[in-house]
Length: 120
Image 1 (cartoon, rainbow, N blue to C red):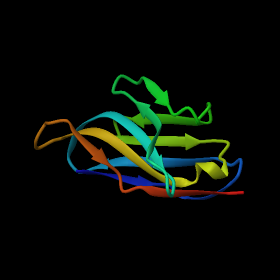
Image 2 (image 1 turned 90 degrees about the horizontal axis):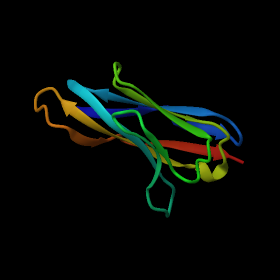
Image 3 (image 1 turned 60 degrees about the horizontal axis):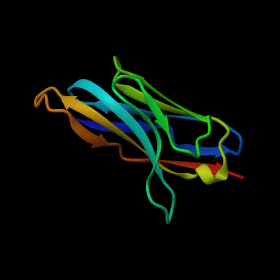
Image 4 (image 1 turned 180 degrees about the horizontal axis):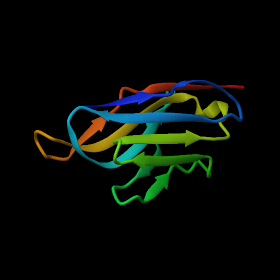
């Protein structure tokens, strides 16, 4: 069981981009999911989080530009980013609480990270 991220790349300032995070393997259930980012020389910070009940929370810097969504049937999460700025350049990581089929124990997983670069 693991998380597979996709969608990173180079985007122009003001552009939009979507990241995906898919649970791979025998997963019984997808619970809460979050996106975090880490820029060079900075600490990892919360971008967006959605609870298992669908409540959302965003980092203060988001200011309405990003939207997190989760497809529980496909066990895939998305981060839609609009109005991108050069300071959004970072490695983006997804994090999710997955319940593997074999253990049935909710466990925290991290994706491998995907680079988003916003050109000025």
